[in-house]
Image (cartoon, rainbow, N blue to C red):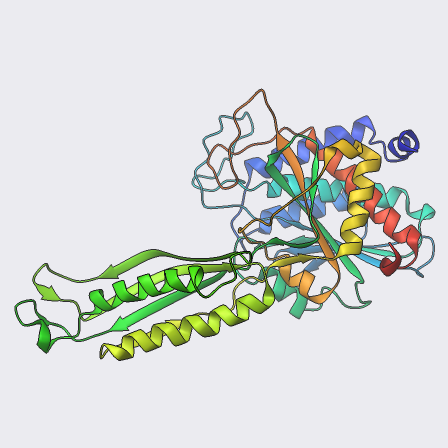
Length: 401
């Protein structure tokens, strides 16, 4: 069974060389969120070279709709993010970034290359499957709202997508292995800004003032208690304040302090509850000391909640290709975030990890200036995406996978 799958999904030498060229180019020419004009044009150039129909989506997105031998059947979506980060690269790769202060430090160049290879393979095999596949090259994953914007613009419609797949290269799993998890695999990410308005005065007469710094310290302590004493210990919650600004001199009572931070949860219900408690708590403390709190707490990224049946399908397909010993069931979610959660809120979805850790070289985490991966992971990703999509299409209905 495994040998026949490998034979069917084999990538020819020409395609392997093309994918290596694509990854090198993308890594050398990274672009920040919503500025991926050159990146999307490069994606289009390969689709045109291969004769594969496609369409632009928004300013910098690209969508490929593939139709098999008959339209009846599931409609599967596959997503890759295409943007880079504002990080100065320090890898010393031969194809290191040419853009000062911009780097593919999160593996999106690999994700894009893997999806291009998947598009090519599915297009070549289209006479062997029925149904539809929508491949989405998504801009702006590193900026809030990109996936949500595409959804609002109809990327999951006409015809409706029945299920979504995505992967992320992962430096915390052995090279070529796969990590899967049912339920939450990444956390929500909601950024906040609190402005405490007190009353300035002289430090010799604090009773005539309202000290915004002292009130902010009370808020910081109360927020930590909100995590430790108001949340189920087995339901992960993070409240982090990473920036505080306030005060003008050592003998002046500060009239204004600004705190900025982020909250993370893995449950949609906890996310909603936390927001309500957070606002009530902060406003209450400020009011109790005679100050006023202005709070900005917009909805950010939802958690990625994996569908059990789709996740099981990825697990089975990874076992077919790589062997069961290379498939890891992740015991806990990451408190990092990915806007793929917006897709997962709309349709059954699964998001899995593709390991890139190698024992013979240093391991650098995502968003590190020395982050890199071996390009040999790309054909593994292509085969895994392709095999999973074909398996889902062959089932006839996603619900029965």
